[in-house]
Length: 288
Picture 1 (tube, rainbow, N blue to C red):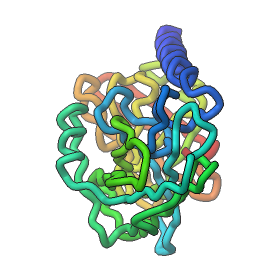
Picture 2 (cartoon, helix red, strand yellow):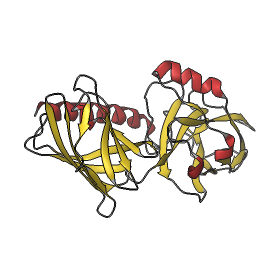
Picture 3 (cartoon, rainbow, N blue to C red):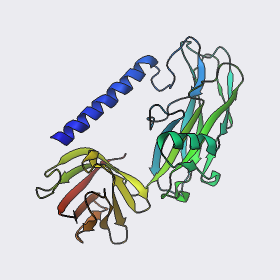
Picture 4 (cartoon, one colour):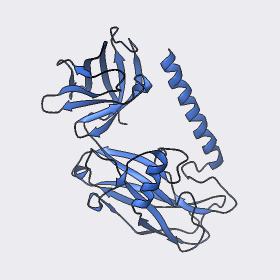
């Protein structure tokens, strides 16, 4: 199938790119800078970089909505050919400002903004990489129940200074998009009926439904529709509605039988747009 081939080639290209970067890191694969002649002090990669090649790396890390504080461990590293720090190295940490975010937004065409400080807390403003060791950890605590799910927020973290050694040029600043997941967010098996206008009898695995708001999730369906499609779930009635698709398809009209089953975590959506008709079933397979 043409669409699946396209997705396959994209996946292979992404894997090659990751493998090429990782090959420079030897056995320390979570450290961001390649090994060089001189060790540098930097943040350890907490997740996959959202856009490779940006001046400041951004990571998307999402958690269920909960009033209980969620503690996320992060690390700094003494990265390079030396097996460990020659002495205790104190690494001072700070929260950056909107300027770091603005640079990322300008480079990537995004609209992230600084997360309010009442939504999170930095567990330490300094950590020590012990002599002979390569890493030290610290925590960031977040309260996802306070998050505004309609807007993208990030926390910019910086290594402001160190007691000795060289601070990494590329990875002394990072951006973390701490997100909150609604009840539908996750990875799904995606199937369509024989009467679906685009990609009839589809059967795709690991299709993400990503939180876009308190009651909405979205996906690009592996480029099937060439754009983002958004579903709204009424968690009182469990009715599902298609609220946004690419304009070239037409205005979506959702059949009232469309629904979300919270017990089985199955999203069934039947809808039309222009002359096209769709019948889709998402079956939850795991966390995203």
